[in-house]
Length: 363
Ligand code: NDP
Ligand code: GDR
Picture (cartoon, rainbow, N blue to C red):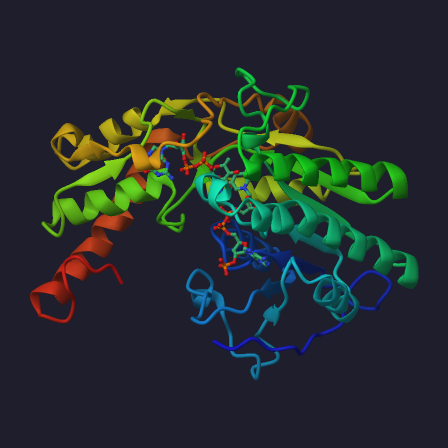
């Protein structure tokens, strides 16, 4: 799939009815679900993708339509980077979106301890660059744009649960501190310039499209491979950590709802249930008739310098004002992920048995 730059102009101030959204991080887990959701709502969706030496569009390939098919292609991709302010302003001017969703991030908490500068540059300053590009675009064109910032429950860090919009932040990683900066930049642009800008404070949300080095997907991927005989062990870190896990497909609706209100505001989005990593292991391994204790080994390498022990959201504001509530609960989420990863492992097994793939290798 190649990036392309043709843009059909339809937005506020222009004559069309189709709404236009600009999504950063479109190739990520949430970007793919949000794009499906917005296309379903009749939007034209423009995604900013970063240059990589391999194609990084696996999560959106199924909704890609060749741009030469101008009447059908409503998702369009453009090269940009949150570390490159000029690219952000240029695409805003060309695309003229009604809504901007800033989902791009170096989103791995443990990795943020390894690459703290880069994490801050993309997560914190990247959000500021985009806000500033939106602000200056609005000043220069007289248009309006609504802005969504992907905030995180990691910002609460060591503050005990339940966590709501009024709970103080105490970040415990370079990632979380950077998300706090992005949160306050967003609040500041709303207060200083009257920008319609919202912070979604989203608790962990997972899916079969979750990156494979986040704990839920790491478990379900390994479980599938263990079940079909491609591996025997799974190495994990702190399995006593507790998270409020929801389904990503439910959470992207909350992002959109925030931008459909009369006034911009900040909202916690969560299931209001918390489970430990150990409980995730119990439910997932139990579902396929295995005992996790036979396969899991604790590896100190996966412990973090500072951990977030317990997250459990209070989403009453989102429920009351946005009318949002999660549809997928913990057990259903776990089973959905296990089912998909078991199918994937079975396909891998066919390749291994036919000699097309090494058992140790993951495609
Ligand atoms: P992913 O890690 O799956 O996706 C991150 C996206 O950001 C990818 O598209 C990635 O591109 C892109 N990206 C990374 N660096 C840059 C950069 N320098 N410039 C442009 N794009 C970049 O994250 P999720 O989809 O899970 O999360 C979406 C957002 O929500 C993130 O900001 C995350 O921090 C936040 N969040 C996520 C939660 C969750 O539980 N999933 C909870 C709370 C907040 P590429 O595909 O090339 O890597
Ligand atoms: P988190 O998600 O840090 O909450 O950030 P992750 O799945 O990485 O960790 C959850 C908990 O599991 C523990 N853990 C392990 N984690 C990983 N990745 N790998 C392991 O082997 C392992 N063993 C135990 C972790 O210590 C942690 O306590 C996610 C990201 O999506 C962020 O971008 C987002 O902001 C937050 O969720 C909300």
